[in-house]
Length: 319
Image 1 (cartoon, helix red, strand yellow):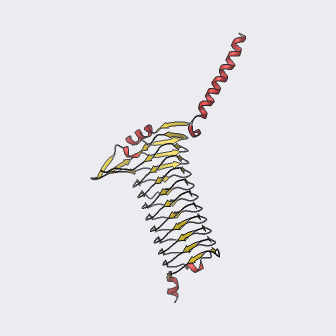
Image 2 (cartoon, rainbow, N blue to C red):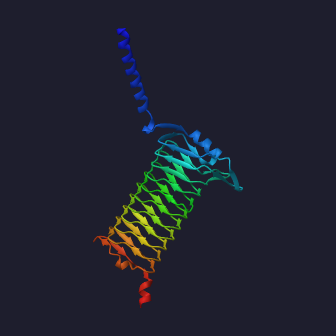
Image 3 (cartoon, rainbow, N blue to C red):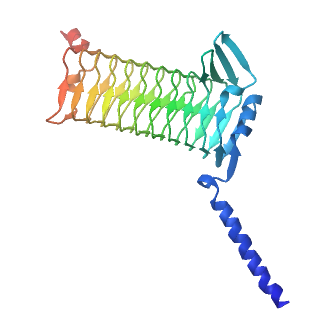
């Protein structure tokens, strides 16, 4: 009887030790491990997708739905009819919504909301030429590899990338965003491209950190745009862009080369208490209301504040 009393605690100790070992081996401390093939099956069937506190192993492919249309001889469009919600998840593999080979291109239409909140992406994301009918939310997420939303179209419910962190390069060029666009408190460690995009509603880039080059050239801001408290550490370019609504860069920091050449500013512009170092230029830009001579910026002694060729229409009207 005494031997049994000694054996039982030993067995319990071994069981608890093994159980703890299994728990610590779960990747990223997520409570579930999900194979991407399970998600791909739901995409194919058009079933709703919801996961929380999970690690996703393998590649997710949105170009596998059963609902596909041949748009042209070399373009196939897949309709993703699933609503998509991932919360606090880690993705080990690639996420793909566009494919292209020598013969044809495949793109994806998302007919319901798409949410990846507080997620970590350890491989690439490719949403090139995707159309998002519903809400798109990537808030509080980290992107450790290249991200591509080139030529994506976002509907009236908008896109939300606030408090995101981009470790590698990201492309958001040639987009059309019908709803609000929010990148507030985002961090870009590498180059970011928004060139030739169009925004129909307010755009928020408040308190964003741009560590490398940022390209916002040839953009149409059709409503208000806010870059208050943002930091630009390398070259920032807004050349040949159109600002139709209120534009604010209040208390932002410009640290190297900042270009606003050949721009059109239709409404009130505020650069109050912005810190300017290096080269800052409004060359050949047109201001309909505000005057760049009166922006109340803090310009360092070694900086070049260039207004060559600027036109302030409000001054001409007063004359």
